[in-house]
Amino acid sequence: MKLRKNILIVDNNCELEQIVKGPLLKELKDSELSPIVVRAKDGAEAAIKSENQKFDVVLIDTEVPRLMDGGFVYGLLSYKNTQDADLIVVSNRDLTELPDSLKNSKHFKKPVSPQELISAMIDVLNAQHHGATNKEPAATQAAAVKYAVDVRVINAVIKATMSVLGQFGVTSVKMEKAGPKSPHDPLLGEVSSIVDIKSAAFQGFLAVSFDKGSYLEVVSTMLMEEQTELTPDNQDAVGEINNIIFGNAKSEMSNFGVQLTVPKVLIGANQVIACEKGSAGMLIPFSTSRGKFYITVAAFPVAKAA
Image (cartoon, rainbow, N blue to C red; front, side):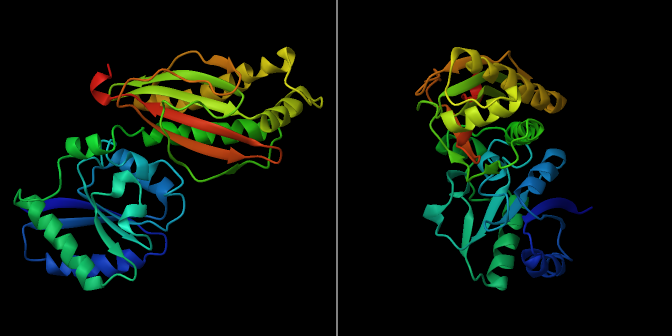
């Protein structure tokens, strides 16, 4: 009986799948391995596919949409279905320019030789089969990047935020490039709402923070009256806004065992949230027609999670 090996290819134009799938199946036809190739067209679809299936190899084209500016690539080493996978990356960028979660991958600079790529995949699969892989253990890799945030948490909060602001009539929202951020640094923005998050393998906090311009834009549409300054009266609205955002996100996150506390409002710039040593964070910035707001996700060391 052949040993099944699941391979996720993140590739929006099918080029990598066309290069790899046929020759790989042919090369391994008479071996003890049976490769199953699954393709995702972007980072968001890769995150969804990884929720339901464990992968032994993840092959990534870093230029695909919603990959480098979303949660999937930053959660690879902590996400249960990819944390033990061997990573192979095809990119226009040098290895030093890639996120830490990709730094231990087999890296190919474009244009990539099809034969070299196929040979690398066969070497990885054979090494896994014979227990001779040179890949560092997942725990070692995780230590190198500290602790990654759960991609499902990020996606749920982004989805809820965009939906709620759209309901309030803020239609000019654009998500900008996400990236790692030290959770020990002050929060960006002047008005923030924080919730603690917890699951069996994840513990940390979420913050939605608005700068003055974006907050006044949201509050003006919410109160149906133009607001030009932050006042004690309109500052209370951040709690209501973020209660709705976190409430919407909670309905999705509860499906995979994540719990949220009641939001806490923080008024004023440069707010610092106490975090344990070794915590990691991610910042997702957004722009509106009048300013910016930010989603900050922090993950405390997984070993300390309850």
